[in-house]
Image 1: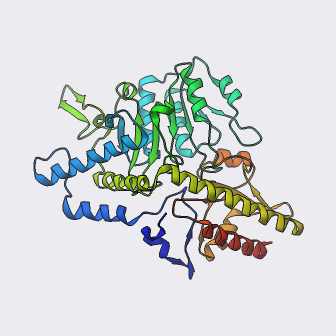
Image 2: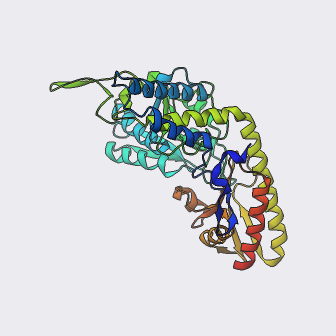
Length: 412
């Protein structure tokens, strides 16, 4: 893992070396990704699919090569199953609209889980309001894992779709999506996986998972902002209507009506982010040059090491009436740890912790992490979250622990 590939890691913050532990929000970019953006705009910038001239042909080729690279990266059967979007949120909104128009009627039910990001709650709420359908959620056990028995009890003939996060962006817990998919498919219910926090951190094979849809973002996997993916099995995508209208998604437009393009283009209205797709391709190449299994193992080591260091910090501080509480501490995680600090049982506000860590060059995330229903269930206004990327190392964690100890002594 070559940190030198990421120029921003040489930056200083408030006179301190930057320690970037906010990867669940967005990852930093290697030089090859930034070079790809410059290359595209410098050498072959041109609108794609519509031009016969050289630049357009090159840009089109680069865009479609990126689509194939994404398909290969997640194990899709065909690049026709890869729809480029603006990101995970855009993917889930597109699916909610299209699936809702085709299959949801009054009284139908959609199931999500208690750990979802707002992007996997709000689009379904909007759909349910529009169609007079019902949104249900899988509850949690006390250890903050999903209650699969309760999930089974939610299923009925009214259940039309299940959409769950592979990895919680708050807790870092890895949801049993394989089991959820198996149970759902026994009842012929399709499943969408929010892969925003899993695709950047572990090898994903959509055919092995057998998920019907998968959504993820480029900016969380060392790629640029403004590019994402909605994967869908061909048989489902062919049944869904487009969610936007305009150029490229059409076959023919007449005053009498419009016919739509073939897959995947019927879901890609307007000029696509062909520069973003090319840069995402380079990000995928970069990750594959390291190896997804190696990335997963490295980040697992960092997560376990960080939890152990935080446990030691908690033991050191408890005689002073201070508790460093890690949520879902007993559960395996995928590169995310959320915690709070309590002083004689009073919560030290996460914002104060994050602010003082920032003053020491440590970038973390504080707040509800766009998962308010889960935070409400935890009974706190928010948490402090540290999250790891392939360029982090144990020295980053040691710096974070030292800064956290100093922060606690200031605030407590």
